[in-house]
Image (cartoon, rainbow, N blue to C red; front, side, top):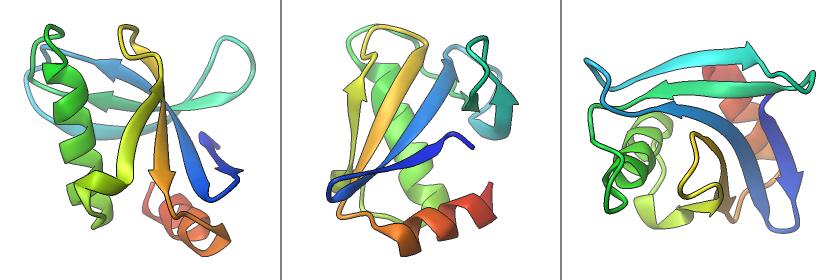
Length: 100
């Protein structure tokens, strides 16, 4: 699964497709390194952080979390990103796994 625990947070590995026809969470897909990533599409363009902002907004709405709890931990200028959800624990991790 693309989810993992970190101290005081949950991490989500994402493959983002900007400039898509619609905003959507496609679901987990296999990664080239043998793991998995959450495939997400947003309509925003990948300039000035617009696609990252759209990604955070989409995930927060889908998972019913405050946008301020989510941040791009790594991959800000890449399609492969790690999203950090502050305050996450095992309970949140299990909840996210069920929703995907």
